[in-house]
Amino acid sequence: MSRTCIKFCGLNIIDDLVYADSLDVDLLGLIFTPKSPRFINGERLKEISSLKITKPLVGVFMDQPVEQVNEIKSVLRLDYLQFHGSESYEYCKSFNMPFIKTIHIGSEKIVVDQMLIKNAAITLFDTEISDQKGGTGIKFDWSKLINEQSLQDIIKTSKYLVAGGLNLDNINDLLVTYKPKGLDVSSGLEYNTGKKDHEKMEHFVNIVRTNDS
Image (cartoon, rainbow, N blue to C red; front, top):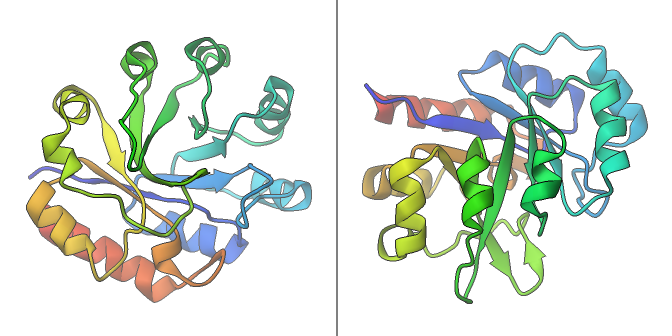
């Protein structure tokens, strides 16, 4: 039985984070990019740091100063850093931590920094629309997972997550047709921006784990 990696992202309500931690998921994502509506502010960061969360935590950043990342790391135990912008290899490696690097998939040619991907613990495929990188709630053209050689090279050799517009209505198609190693879901499990629907969270996990078996 192959196990699909599940990452729940954009968790910024305490009850949602605690509930997500109780489910059969692998990674919990917290967003520290101020532009995001799911941004974790300083007060919420302190609340989260006092919790006994058992699942690995991912801190999501986008083109932010090193000092900001280090400041959050000093308050909260993070297991992975996720870099969602145009960060360089030198920047990502400078924190001496496992990192997740995003490849943005839109209408333009997909650009892959081989050194970055080779050293990333996990690669994330996410939707880019115009200048909006991630958080779109819209899926990219999944046929690119098969047809784009640059993505195929990663899929064959690396751990990766598929993100962008995943929800209860389309996840089965993704699982059956493309058999991804990992999934990253956020807005598709919400009843309002930043607020997760616990029934949807559980249902999503059940669909994936049923498919795994």
